[in-house]
Image (tube, rainbow, N blue to C red):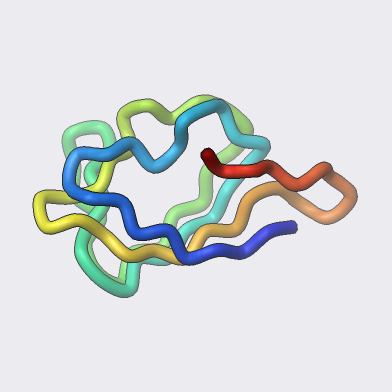
Length: 78
C-alpha cells in the first residue's frame, strides 16, 4: 500500500499507466473523469485498470492517492 499527495497541473493525466486499484481523495481543486467533474471533497475508488481519461481540473488538483492493496507490490509514479 502506498499513500502520496501528488499535485498535477490542469489537464495532466493522474495515472501514466494502468494501476492495480486506487483510491483518491480530492481536498483541493477538481478531477475530470468521463466527462464529469469530481470537485473538492470527492473520493474515488477505482478497480484494476487503465484510466487515461482521468485528468487534473482547470485549476489543477491536490489529491491523496492510495495505490495497490495489502499483499500487492507497490507502484511507482513517474
